Length: 95
Image: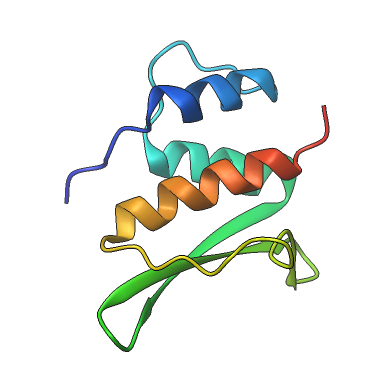
């Protein structure tokens, strides 16, 4: 399995929120950083109908956050859903 690199927009958002890696981070590294430092887990689910969605959960309470004001978007790949979920989670991180 090959890890996918994040987009430059996501990298800029990560850096603005305190992400401190000198190399371009991958999606899984960004996802891990959100989970371990910001207590936000980006969960990707495959749905009947051949599409992917994301949810954002607060650790350890397992409360879904940041979902009430966004439309449910169907993504064609796991990686697209993960990228969108990472960006949404970063918007929830307080400066």
